Length: 281
Ligand SMILES: Nc1ncnc2c1ncn2[C@@H]1O[C@H](COP(=O)(O)OP(=O)(O)OP(=O)(O)O)[C@@H](O)[C@H]1O
Image: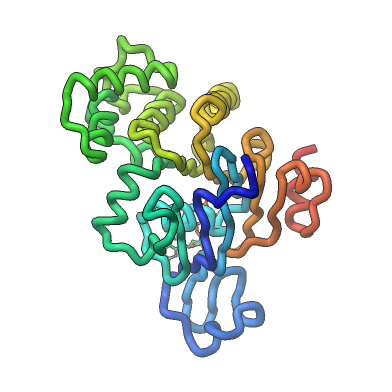
């Protein structure tokens, strides 16, 4: 990573609220909100003024407790949700000169299909459980514009091997796989169009510790070999410590601390971050 370079992704003041807001909460968040919630109009401020950069080849970790807004932020980046306000610039798309959140849904689909990969905590969101594993990967290749069956098959096999799914099982549907294998197929699918940016949302949560370790190893290997930029979201600082070069700490929809992961682990500034770090010991 070279911080002198232009970031591959820039997010500026991303805000996502569920509800219209009222005259009381709109201008006085800190005084009014209970965590991220306005008791007067019931608006939820899931993400407020989130700004960060991601550089070529780095893993940015996002850590925070349940409800802090991590998943909402990832959904906004993958256009699963529409932002309330904010800007996003992706360097490989129109030289990072246009706000991707203001693009048409067709353009956003193009960005999803060609520039981004997403791995969800719940494999049912990322995979069609009744398609074969190879068919799941082909689906993403077709979305990215490939029509050549032989090439798609070769690429799908290569990807499945890369994530250590035995080719003898490539025709099996993910519903027949263990949780760890389902995540591996999701990762293969997300990588199929060679995305420069991969988004990973709680991808090891709920897996046995040994399976979790092998999926984390796979993610590190992919990052090392392919040099992809990644955003990794987890409620578990141990996961972030293992993967991320830099870390953002979120609480109640806002960023409370960010910096090099080592720095945050050695010298956490915010009381909530201190609590997270001490819980690792
Ligand atoms: N569709 C929705 N309508 C209303 N509120 C929502 C909606 N989706 C999320 N929220 C709220 O937004 C806030 C942030 O949720 P989000 O799922 O992003 O948090 P999180 O940090 O990812 O936690 P978790 O890991 O438990 O999902 C929460 O208060 C949640 O209740």
